[in-house]
Length: 315
Ligand code: G3H
Ligand code: 13P
Ligand code: ZN
Image 1 (cartoon, rainbow, N blue to C red):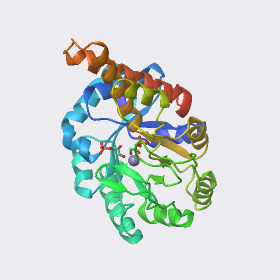
Image 2: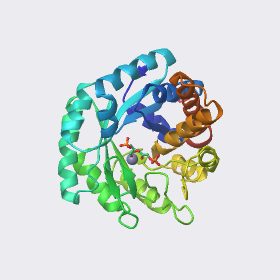
Image 3: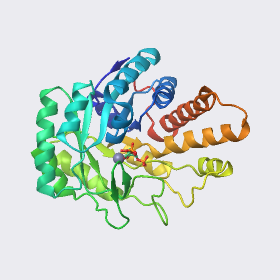
Image 4: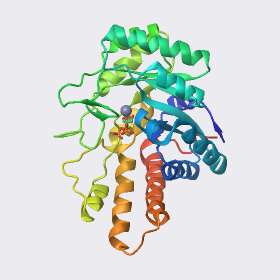
């Protein structure tokens, strides 16, 4: 029942061939939904906030809320900065009690990414905080950055070894075919598992034992949830996510952290739309936000049981 970093979580996840879910937060109902879902599965979890979520809710508020709800639910969780754009944002998060940060320099030239990531690692490690970085470019919309279809690039395995060696980063987000947002694939879903295996093997050979790999852009985009949104007035067309079996396969390999945000947004939106449609006379926010919170809790439970495999990981 504590705010912890992800080191131990990842070690156990690698050895147990499962992954820890990393879910994006920006308000009380999302934090409660995630932590109640994790508690029901006795699972560790990562709560993460983007820069725009920090702007929306405030780092101090997010930290205090997480701390209070952790005490109530008895879950072990890391509080993580997602897609940190610069050292300044990293510093703000560390000052506000975050236990893990990501610096995302994937849109910079390689040497620039190495240099900036190294600076963040030095600062964060001096403050006892772990760091995730990214190499390769995912397609889709993430925070304030949009990478157009066809402009992404997969992670180069040799470069990954060089990057981890030179930066000292604690975990690495790779690009192997996932993408951010609700519109991930035009045709069939495809992930480059061979590349993932090669990266992991090379890391092992280079002396990085059980090195944790991170998968961003991993929402499943459940067609039933899209149908529910659209049934009650939504207009979400052509959305497609990553099939659960692909994520399970990745989790059984070196992937120890799987990021999902879009699925939470969709679940909440579906619940709120249905609630508005079925109770047009109601106007107490606790009604529809309560429904949305339950949708998040059910989603997280289902991800932990059917996709991540992290049930009982708090033992
Ligand atoms: O990968 C990015 C996350 O989905 C966060 O998005 O900046 O809109 O909170 P956001
Ligand atoms: P999705 O858009 O697939 O939920 O990915 C979220 C993510 O990677 C946050 O960093
Ligand atoms: Zn991401």
